[in-house]
Length: 377
Ligand SMILES: Cc1cc2nc3c(=O)[nH]c(=O)nc-3n(C[C@H](O)[C@H](O)[C@H](O)COP(=O)(O)OP(=O)(O)OC[C@H]3O[C@@H](n4cnc5c(N)ncnc54)[C@H](O)[C@@H]3O)c2cc1C
Image (cartoon, rainbow, N blue to C red; front, side, top):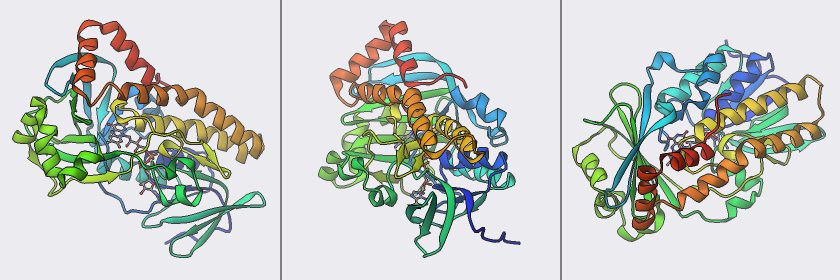
């Protein structure tokens, strides 16, 4: 039987990616009435490298959200290649696991539902208004819901950013992202990050015998060449490692999943009283391989603060102030460091420099990696 629509929810979450779903799991476990709206319908593919840093593995196990039953790949080694195929390898300090978003997101949604969260799919939030200490959330289909708290977990770019008039939304971003699932003779425990002119491409295993192949590229060469296929042939496959991957792999999808306008500009963790989680609060460059870990960690911090607020132990001002402070303390430097390191990628000279850094100074490259990753929590 479909549950009755409540007069007012404790929490409404706009967006059901990693950040939204972890918030839903944590807050529903505490007994709060949670409603989550996701504009798409699970399962679906997203542009993402699908490598999850182990900094969140212990936490996911603790809250019953580690996808053990989906048999994630275990990744322990890192390989970097430059645009002309210079290569270096290092062990990964923490390592990570590989799981497709096609499997992971619905898994988290089922966990959240089993804890009492309501999840409505194909439900796009059109706008959110704060009126006298509560929120009115309007969906594209005209339905209106009310809540005491709204969490914005709508990812890197959404119609809600435009509605909220967020500063980053007005600037065009030069990047596109492309993802495939492939099969072939590749190493199971290795994550490869391969440079090409104007971008970089990751390859790592997910569940089953499938590998994720995902790249970030400047949009300008795509515009000039006209098609993704031509971009791959003329530019990406100039790196001999990528050439071998593209030429020997069996591609699982008919066509790639592609997104536009990936912005790494600073954002605010709180906007019009909406508490932002995951990429909606700030996006780390994908080469760091821990956007999902950050989304999970930010949801853990936020849910705790929301719990205190709903329990009457803090007021709204304190909630917003403390969350903004904690977000900046935990993630501000990482996001900035990711942007700086990304400058070493996508050109021949700088990508060769990055490779020789790993080859010749294990200590320094280990230190750089630590700056963009968190610790177990
Ligand atoms: C090329 C690339 C490679 C990456 N590789 C990795 C990697 O290997 N490892 C890693 O950890 N991170 C990686 N990331 C980053 C990672 O994908 C994100 O950090 C992560 O998905 C953030 O989760 P999120 O919940 O904030 O957003 P998302 O997972 O994007 O979820 C947001 C959700 O909100 C929904 N939504 C949007 N607007 C609305 C609306 N108005 N109403 C309702 N729902 C809405 C969307 O449909 C979506 O489901 C990569 C990113 C890119 C671009």
